[in-house]
Length: 296
Image (tube, rainbow, N blue to C red; front, side):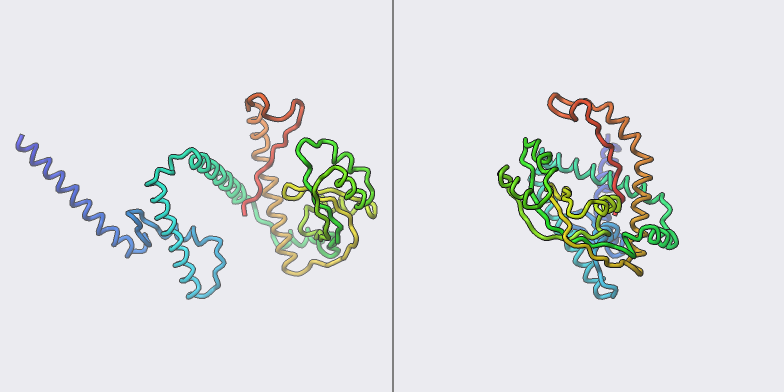
């Protein structure tokens, strides 16, 4: 019995000694550079700091990098403190937080999947870029910038006939009058459409339209009726053009790889999805299986 008591006291003494070592060890870790700060017992590491600084536009000089590093660390410290306050208030157990955390986790996993696919793609060479530039003069030597007369509007929910009624109209004034008659709010303004900012396949279709033909494009939840009023040829050349071509080819290769790797998987999984009544695609509708976009 006495031996057991002595063993218990020794175990308590040992645990206190370990706790004391951990406290002094926090300082040692900070000093060694593995941990840059300790906030309420939570260690902030150099890896976390570097991750926080990713994407920051830091000038290439030592003073600016030091300032950026300190600013990023301050953001990490403030976020850690506020996170602890939220947890103390049990906000991490709220249904809203749990739902948003799930969405964020899933989005991060998809981005990681995208990066994994991109990491296995052979990047295009400068020669590949030059070949693409020579093969697509409409984007480069004959790059076109369209001046547009535009009408932006949103189709009211439940209005299934408006787009069909707009199809035969030949003038922007007629489109405007139709929207007024249908009591649809709209905005009319001038705009630009640059060939290098739009999918090349779409630009080909626009270029093939008869002069003055009205075409409608989606944009941020709105629809925009367009009429070309002027076309300027603005050559796109030099290093910026080569950089654009290499980036375009890289994104295209990643998209094709993702489609090859995941399309069949997505289609197969969709067949097993069970919907509650009133949800899901209409009977007979074809649901596209979107491939992940290239990671930025």
